[in-house]
Image 1: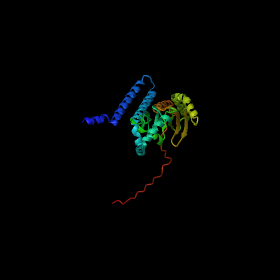
Image 2: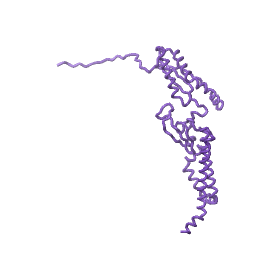
Image 3: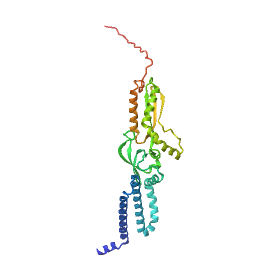
Image 4: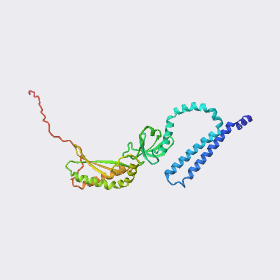
Amino acid sequence: MQEIVDSWLFDPTIGKLIGAIVGLAIIHIIVRILQRSIAPYVKDPDARYRARKIITFLGYFAGILILAAIFSDRLGRLTVAFGVAGAGVAFALQEVIASFAGWAAIYFAGFFRIGDRIQLGGIMGDVIDVGVLRTTLMECGQWVKADQYNGRIVRVANSFVFKDPVFNYSASFPFLWDEIVVPVKYGSDNQLAGEIFNSVVNDIVGDFAASAKEEWKAVVTKYRIEDARIEPMVTMSANDNYMEFTLRYIVDYKKRRTTKDMIWRRILEEIAKTDRRVAIGSAGLEILETPVLEVRMAGGGAN
């Protein structure tokens, strides 16, 4: 029994394993201490999150270096085996490798960052975490309308940044163009209707346009893009049933629903004040001519 214990105690491999465990434990403790100690010095939540992530990755890197230093004398013999095994592992874990590459692209190419509203892999939501393999979103939409949270937290593989388009609602320009189509009945005062809609949309979203101008100038300077109109705009068209007034305006990407609600309420209030000079239109069926209906009855003799 003593010989077995001595062989274990003096076995170089056991000693290296113990050294590796102790080294990794020390690194883990240092990483935890550093993550907790940065809170008083880094006030910005986004910067604090990034600092913690960097400390974690540095801890992983230090752990790999320690393992390589401890087992360096054995690595040379395993080079060929690692080469053959590595090819198989790379094929089996190609999705994992693509996700890791996607993580690097997200951080260094600036696809998006924490807090952005994006659509990735067919899922739309706000980014609440970016991991090495997956991005975590607070999902919007699905059975909930107008880009509102539905309560689901979704983790999407980072590899989707290479497979699908990445839609970012808030990166360089945190505003969206939105539209409301108002049907107005034929015979209404279309001039008055246009004035009402133009006044309402300017009163409610005019401030958005003013604050968006400077940011839009930066976008036009950065990209080869048309210098589009930022101010609200009202246009009219007509169809077989009614006149259509389209209200186009700039809005904060998180306030589409509340802004549309405010505009509709004001429109209905203002239309009610016109004493039926302006009326909301609806689709109708007009019968231009009633067809002649001829009925023939075959009579029988009475008994």
